Amino acid sequence: MRWTPRGFGGERRSADKVKHEGWHEQNILVVSLDDQRLSWPERELINQLGTKLYGKRKPKEESNA
Image (cartoon, rainbow, N blue to C red; front, side):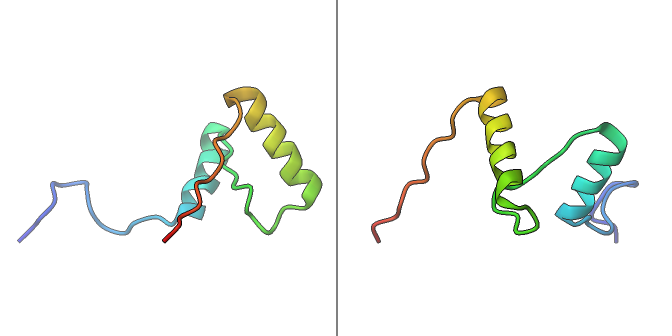
């Protein structure tokens, strides 16, 4: 018995696969500032671009649990 319509379901792509395809097919770049593959100057550049395009980020709230 099928639980999904035809053409849907199957294997789910990983987040890295979606990012890879987005870059190659649509020229969209998705980057995390926490990505350890980036050097400090690269992280700073990403931070500056994000701030310029989308404004300052809200600080993370610390949980007091």
